[in-house]
Length: 259
Image 1 (cartoon, rainbow, N blue to C red):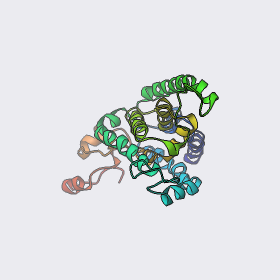
Image 2: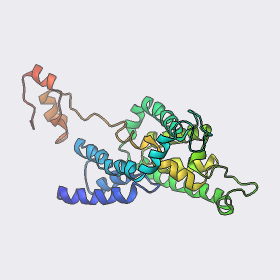
Image 3: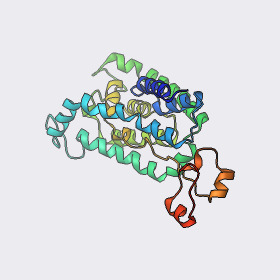
Image 4: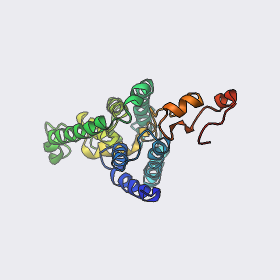
């Protein structure tokens, strides 16, 4: 299939799934597999990451007024009732650190399962069931609204999120790093709802999480061939041996095929 047509199809898939509580990365990888694109191909791995930058970079534009308000009211908050630890900007960064630390330590595990379509499909199914169950659990409280007695929800706005809720949401986001196919938005929304946030408050929390910027390429495997030229020609699949350490080539005094 023509690369331009492939790019158009993948762009549509990315645009339809990025702002839904499903994994856009998993949908891209599954679509690539259906279109017979090698999931181990370095170019298409890079493409899968880069194509998502459009959706990520539009967030600061869409939320520019809100971001400006958070910055201008830091650290006391809009109503003067926040501290440097409880301001929404601080809570966002705390949640990010809670997510990024373990994800970095688990890089090898993440890389091992990054291309596993079975894990992606299972994660998508489990994520859908989890969201449905959590939504059903909070349905009565959502319908009753703020101030209702015995409500499971006690945080109706993102600005009212507590330090404990931020840490919990950051911990939930680790799942999306370790298990490919687990949506970051789903983890944030479901985790927030379980922590006593309304669906709307948890949904607002999702785009604000810097974890959307990190982890896109986390665990990406290294495709470079480190074999000698004869071994590479015998053992490497077509196209995989193109990227070789220049130092090794110079030491061997050989020109790698494909260069």
